[in-house]
Amino acid sequence: MKKHILGGAIVLFLLVAAAYGALYVAPTERTMGTIQRIFYLHVPSAWTGLTAFFICFIANLLYVVRRQPRWDWLGVSAAEVGLTFTTVVLVTGPIWAHPVWGMWWTWDARLTSTFVLWLLYVAYLLLRTLVEEPDRRALFSALFGIFAFIDVPLVFGSIRWWRTQHPQPVVMGGTGSGLDPTMWRVLLFSWLAMLSLMTLLMLARYGVEAMRADLDLVRQEAEAA
Amino acid sequence: MSLLSNTTALLGKELRTEFRSRELLTTTVVFILVVVVLFSFTFDPTSAESRRFAASLLWLAFLFAASLMLQPCFLREQTNDTLSALRLCINDPFAIFAAKLVANTLFLLLTELLMLPVFSILFNVPVFPVFGQLVLVLFLGSLGVSIAGTALSAISAQARMRELLLPLLLLPLLTPVLVASTRVTVGLLDAAPFMEWKGIGFLVIFDAVFLTALWLFGEYLLEE
Image: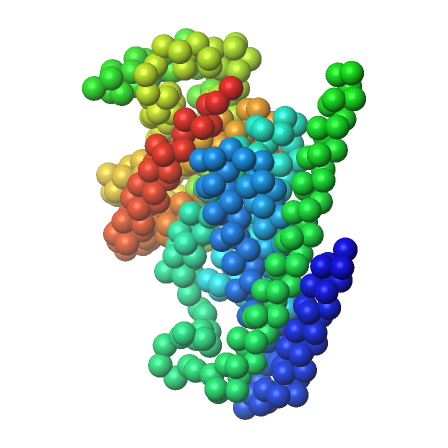
């Protein structure tokens, strides 16, 4: 319990510091103005979501190879947390886009592939609710998770090649893009804060899943007795 | 060698089962026809408009049809309790997938080829000058759909709400196939037809990636 409170306090501190950095330390962007500060929530959430999905993928692979329930627990925790962060991305994106591009949504490569990614992991979680038997649920969802993850680069590639009307990527884009060093520092710090939040949520979720498995076991024993 | 002979034997079984009743093919053809007709009410199907929408319409109809057509693929084995028997008499479980996915590709391609002339007449787009290229993209697209769909139908057959689950799992996964094949088809149905080779290459990559994944992980999908 003490560990949880301490962890929560550290994460909260980091998040508040990141918010302060985003609102007061980072310089105001020249053309977009204050609205651009949502960038420090939007981009770190996207990176954190992808990190969580990557963890999910590794957990899925490990489950298929090792068949230990803990990898299944980690997989579902990572998928749920990743989905949460991706939802933040999909919500903050339009809020940023509307004043800047003059529209809420454009079917550009990044937006569309993030949306498809979101749908794939919603499907992953839905699949888990529809298979009763725990071992089978773990195995099937792990396999679907693997297929979904290897699909992501293909989705991104196909959309990027054929549906481009898209704005120059700000980070790691072509020539002419680039960030002010202070902006970079705030961005990376925000990412760190988000990663700590991700870790905290994932650990908590993992604990719940482990408890649920224990409960199932006890219930089975009680039924057998 | 055993993989090849197992696959051909199983493929024979799949084809025999289907061609005895032809249930799957007939139903799918009628389904595509219904979707295509319904689509025509959603826009003004003049020649110019058709050129813009026909390709996407065609591929959406094929994808929806495929997501329904692939349902019985493993369900049939499960209802008849034949999957364990199949596993016992086959050395390499990948043969089961290989046979099913070849059969599914053939079924899909067959329905698509049957629909193509009807589609061409209804929507006023000439398909015969580019028939060869169309067959190529239809084949590569259907192969991708079948690879992913066969794998996922093994999953959905063992879940609740399976009729809804398979399209839900399959369709987002097939986004790259839809984008690439539609793009190639748009080029082919253009007033001045051209071949988008990049799209063909992309479909080949998709098929190869998912075939490898199925080869690596397929046997786990068949565990009892």
